[in-house]
Image (cartoon, rainbow, N blue to C red):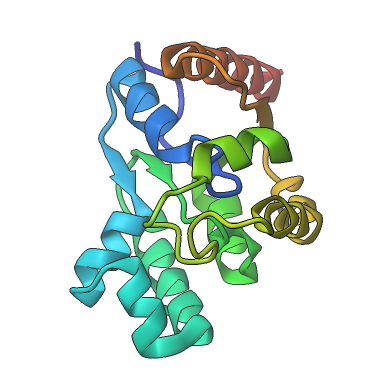
Length: 181
């Protein structure tokens, strides 16, 4: 299914909201290439996300993430799964406003905890511990105001990935038809 836009479809949201898994399925449905920003950061650095963070610190990690996002957002149409906190960066939001349709996969703390607990590739969570929900609730409080600037908001639910991707397609179609009016 083709959509009537040449813009990048940028999925934003907290870690565990489904950006990568929904993004892959969405790209299939829209017949577009899929790009995962976290994978692109790892390729650019030649290190895992956790290694980048340990070697260079949070500030340089975020600066590298912003450079990668700027490059991808200046490129060809695709479905792009952003890094968890990348949309907080002013430069990334500005590039996205010009070159993308942004879709916030909004998830509550319980779902994010369920999806991220015990995951070792989540550099900002340090695996599962008793304070996981507190960490996630803090991220929600800090970052949701930025995600709220997205063009489209789709609730991320505990459902099959294909169902969420279908709801994103419906939201995109509605957004594009309203924009034409």
